[in-house]
Length: 317
Image (cartoon, rainbow, N blue to C red):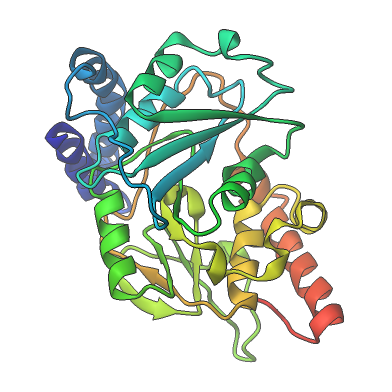
């Protein structure tokens, strides 16, 4: 497990210094951060393969009561070949979750037989693979887990991020201290104009430090977010409404559910960056749609505000 933390420390150190130039025109910080990430993508999968049979790299699944710690994520064909790397980093946490659940659409994967062998092998070490009807895309990450495990502690994850080994530890530690707040380690501080109106998403402040519980924090769920069903509004599982208002931004809908419930969000200790799994031909990235030229995040935030202003007379963001 130490090897993941070792790489993460180096990567985060230089990543946060990337805007600074060194040696004239050479951006040394950018160079080191980039190639540290490349090395992580080469060395860690090899390390995982050679150490996979160790008893310490498996989940025990012993807890029978409520308040299980469950990591939930989904994937799709473009990323399925490498999602096993993500799950390895979640299995190798210092504080282990009780379950890791991967939700898969039957439309994309009709049976276990079409899944990669490295992914299937993780079932023997604690991974649960659940097939679901239809395809609600990134909403699979949370819609089904809150239906099946409504009373448990849920940590949401993405399928293209290698997680530092302290993720579950820091999130659950913060949750014990403040059981009624969302605990996250990747996100933004919402910025407002002089009249108090929410500014464009691209103007929000990327957080790179701990922050006490606040209602002005926007969490990026894929960065690792501990969240519980009772912390969110009753529209949480209204998938038709979610897809209507936020067709490409499940994080915006989730944050709206939190804000409607008046639940605060705490930003916990962490590297404040994410080490991505490098995926060839990965041109399908929601971030490009949501915060790129089309600024669909702003459109979907406006959808949320308009809907709940008409319904409750309240601006959510």
